Every structure is written in C-alpha cells, then in structure tokens.
Image (cartoon, rainbow, N blue to C red; front, top):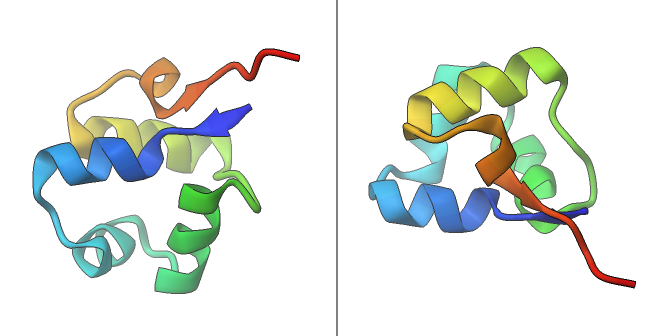
Length: 65
C-alpha cells in the first residue's frame, strides 16, 4: 500500500506540525505515516481523514505488483 497522506496534507495547506498536534502524535510519527514506514491506527486514520476533509480510502493507494 502506498501512502498518499503527504499529498492530502499538501492540498489542505495545513502545516505538518499542526496536524501532528491535532492527532496527538509526534511529528516523527506523522512523517513515518507519510513515508509509508508505518501506518496510523484505524482511529487515527479516521481522525486524519476527517481533519483533511477526505475519506480514509483517499489516504492510500494500492500498489500494483
């Protein structure tokens, strides 16, 4: 699965630090979600999607093999 979180954040114009504070995660954790090194919990994914005004499905895309 490929993360599209960074793209979604860029479209909103929010600062990454603002999003990290709102979701109660560290900026490093948010960076890991953006890069795909780790994934948010379901709860955090829904909160992130709501904050960004997108669906949870929009945060990721399936990678073709």
